[in-house]
Amino acid sequence: KEEDGIHKTQKNKKLIDKLPKEKMGASSWYLHEYQGFWYTPGFLEKIFSLQENFEADPSDILVCSSPKTGTTWLKALSFAIVTRKRFDESSNPLLKAVSHECIPFMEFDLITGSSTTRDPQLPLMASHLPYIALPESVITENCKIVYICRDPKDMLVSMWHFGKKLSLKDVQMTSFEKFVEYFCGGRTFYGPYWDHVLGYWKASQERPENVLFLKYEDMKEDTLLHIKKMADFFDQPFSKEEEIQGVPEEITNMCSFENLSNLEVNKSGKHRGGTPLEMDNNLYFRKGQVGDWKNHVTQEMKEQIDQIMDEKLYGSGLTF
Ligand code: A3P
Image (cartoon, rainbow, N blue to C red):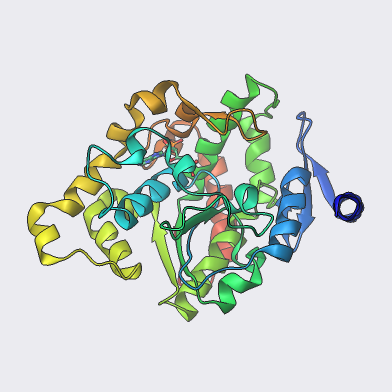
């Protein structure tokens, strides 16, 4: 068995070596292109394993996103909605752990296909994978998928700041100009961003009962409306009594940027300690606003990003 594993790892490494790759500026990172999307080699190995082994259950609910589009928030909201009968405002695990720790991350926690790391009472799991790269059984078993996306300019600024904070550790960041250039060439982690968004957008049009497509900006504008939509989509609509008791409002407030970012665990805690994904929780909370890009993106960059997005999304009915 162990030999099989070693053999497979070597095979995967060889396969990855053959894929088109690109060095990310001055950083020591390479992204490799697989099925039209760009990944780091470490993640690719996990994705191969996930695609090969993962067996979805029809009751599984996937929380999907491209990095830096509001994943932390969507996970918190999904978790709070789905577990609202198990926990109240004071006992909710979201008050003691960042949402990334409350929901298994497919590309990291579920790669062996074994469900040992899963809480049998929790149908949720999360992924940054593009729609076409999801394990086949997720589609054939008709799992529900909730997806969030965001104005690419805000996503880029968010990713840039995230990368810069990481660079204090071991990742060297390129200039913002270079970063925009990579974005426009489609070379971002799990990018091209437009293809990531389009994959889920089209799926939500074709299979609306299975794929709920959300935008960060809309959710900020009316969070309550969207968490009701999410609860309906999960087949767990808020009852009349819950509405009277103000449960949707409680969830909205508990998961707000202001509340979560001020929790001690999110100010000073870490998650996935001792693993390659160890991360300070506060890295996931910066401003939580719509339109912060205006403080970082020049007019020229804005035009460049808008133009490429318009071209790529043309005819899809989706705009930013
Ligand atoms: P900014 O960097 O623009 O502030 P992800 O969770 O996908 O990594 O995305 C991170 C972005 O979501 C960051 O955006 C972060 O501040 C914002 N965010 C985190 N928690 C949030 C919440 N509860 N409500 C709204 N935005 C949130």
